[in-house]
Image (cartoon, rainbow, N blue to C red; front, side, top):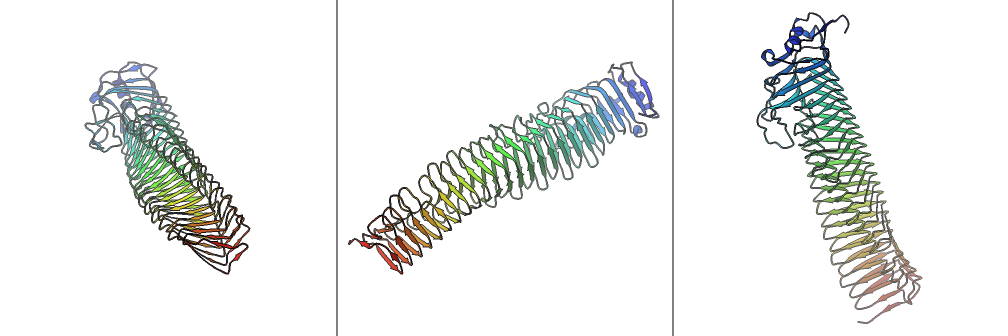
Length: 619
């Protein structure tokens, strides 16, 4: 400090420091010589007054032992404490600020920066006593004052470098123009930023076990916190909360322990949390990240996991949204990512795996999950799910190795899925399952090798699968199954087989190929079903006809189709069903007849080419 006066103090009395500060007429360095200073203070305050705005004060190398109920108040600027330990017991006797209210709780503070500016380097703040009350995730009003370790308000500033706040409450910054700058510090009571304050944390370790609350609270429009390479752990009301229009930007931060609550909770319209290369795994039955009430989060390169957490990412409520890129969601007891009650989420190049629930889920009217180049695998239930009116938009995604459920599951009226260039394979249930009046559209997708079920299945009245230029092969039971009144619209599909059953079920296939089925026909139609085949090929059924129509009321219209090289007949029609064939070719099949007609069935053929006779049984 150029041109500063230097004072050596050794009396051990706090009042001597107060008197030296008050008497300073130019920049002053007060050297405590490693001694401990204690004793009574006038008005229970160690005051650095406003007059030091012109005469900066530096206090070095010693311990300030505040008497019970006292506090250190800074109103001046250019104040610096270096290698100083500040001890206090309390609660502090005076309120910080003007009796600031937060959820009906006033504040008291051991260190009160009242519009001034102070920097601490290599300092230790050791505060004890009082009943620490800390707002948590619920909205229950707190009783009594909240006792803080440090409070900054009225445009003041607090800088900490390599400091320790060991106990006694959190560090709070409040008000427009107020700032906190914390570097390489350990903050055992947590940090709160509100009402327009700006805060920066770098390489800090923030814990809230002693304050029984949040590690980081950012609240109020215009309030912002920026944190890099910092940790937030042991929160009892969650670790990180951004609310009421505030914003926070975290880079290379962690939140891997929480006593209860969320890893990060973002709530309220205008609230926003951006995280880059962060790791969250709080545990204890809450989500790693929870976005609600119109808030937003933007995640890049983050990892969310914990065997006790509910979800990796939960986005809830109309107007709430999340954008995630190159993130990993894993090892949760419930769904990895869930979008609920009208919220939206966009995921790009993300992974969801090894959960005990679902990988990606959109549920509730208006909820929409968009995923591009994402992989979902090794989950205990289903991979990607839409229910209760939720919507899925998938591009270049994969869902595989689901241990019990489906690769893609769309259920309930209003629920829908649109998939482009996706792969659904090696799932224990159906690779694609659409039920209860839901709809799905697949374009240029691969649906392969279901372990114990179907490739695609549409089930229930109003359910509908639309598939274009898709490959559906090597599935255990059937490639494409339509049942219980569902419908399918297929174009350019390459599948092992198509199976339509139950009255009211229907399908239309254009320019499709059905081939290579080991058991049963390439296309099998049950009673009461209506099917249209246009320019399709049915060939290489290993043990049956190319097309089988069985059951009263079944109707098939085939135009410009080919039935070739099947083990049995080209076409088998029986049990009161009907087929209308126009311009079809039936040739090279293994049976001695091209078409077998029996049991009051009816076949009409126009302009068809048959290489073998038609065999009709009389009723």
